[in-house]
Length: 308
Image: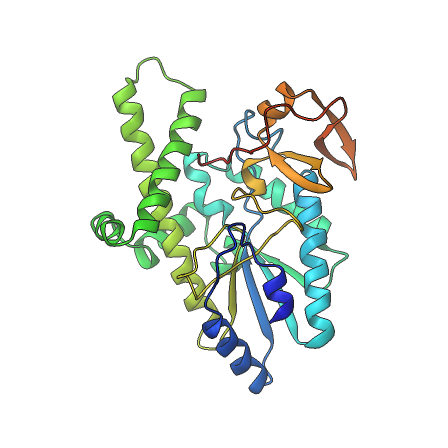
């Protein structure tokens, strides 16, 4: 519990109800079952070159894998039957270009597999593992038809849950930003906003559907669900974690490509913002990323996220 709590993403000093997590871990250990830590992450790279520098992993993913491998080793030293499952849901979202094409996601996942190969405690699974023998189009259709709420149910859920409504608003802003980068002159601003809202609703449906798919896939045996995004105190069934050690930002490596060392801690920035700040592209660990080489980034004390 102490190790997991130390890895928790808790930038605002909020207190979390640990009773659910404590009870789940106690149940697993009492049954002498594997402690499965399930973390949806490494979905792919956003195709926007304002946010990322390419479709392949960069220094952000490299540092994230080092962080997760270290966390697994520390927990496994106490409870050897510990497994850290990394679940990539990139193919579920590649139909709206949120994470590029299916081929781009495949290329990204292949590189992630290469990077985690030295770490035996990390297991990467994607949609092909969750729905074997299905095409990616079929996987997306099944996720929506069999696991996700329909549009009417989704709207009802948003009206009853401020956090879901907040996610919908954030997703809408993100999709509007992506659509504006490849503006179709035949599409009006109103039509573009409507398209962004439609894609945001679709993404939110898939987000909830993926959670239901995991519950069905993992069955009745308890597991600990983790999240790379910040979670509020009332979400007691999930554990928000810092995927990159020392980094408390709300974004994920899917929407950033820059790791800047500020005050000794790695930071994420959109690629365009980093370029304006006087950073250059370098090649370290065989993965491209921006590195601060001239001066501190003036005016970037607070870092924007992909959804703001």
